[in-house]
Length: 243
Image 1 (cartoon, rainbow, N blue to C red):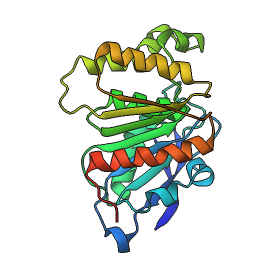
Image 2 (cartoon, rainbow, N blue to C red):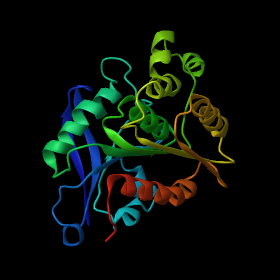
Image 3 (spheres, rainbow, N blue to C red):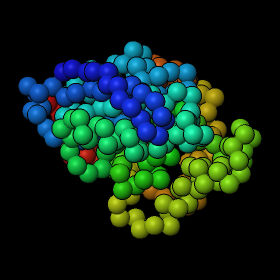
Image 4 (spheres, helix red, strand yellow):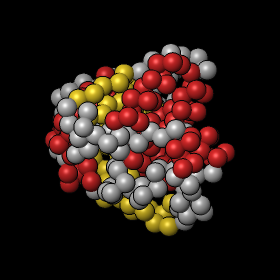
């Protein structure tokens, strides 16, 4: 099994950027094509965080899964200004670069993340249900439109960009083809109430999802433990077998 750091120029960001990719072991899993998991980091980290602070490399080893770890800065994984267009970076530039560089399987991917990346993965998954078959977000930042406004986001943008609005939109669409949605949070996590509130919103909508609470706080011990469960869901949804 191997991993690499890749650098390329992002049109959306107007500069060169890096991402880390974990490649399936060819001896164990063959040459592919392999499905992709996009795994997003939190606000205080970068594209190396999952590699440095967790055992993600070991956890994913049995799976024929290509894992992409992009760098989102402190963007919230949103478009904000001419050179902070991180949603466009992921959805346009990064996905195209991954598909053009590696032997990836066509069709929907999986997405996950923690904290800021948990919120980003939930937003991307709900906004682009045709691109993601499985979502699993940990300890996520899931602000309401009003909370986004309080953070300085313009009212119109806050409404359009909120996971609440995106969930409303998805619930109004046909259930066929929706991604499997799961998110979890530690009971000692400072973001627990945001996760409980979003769970209650999805319940009111009748939008199928799974919400889990576990002992733990906003820590790498928690995320390393529960990313194993996320990988199991992604493997099931993507039809992968452990080797």
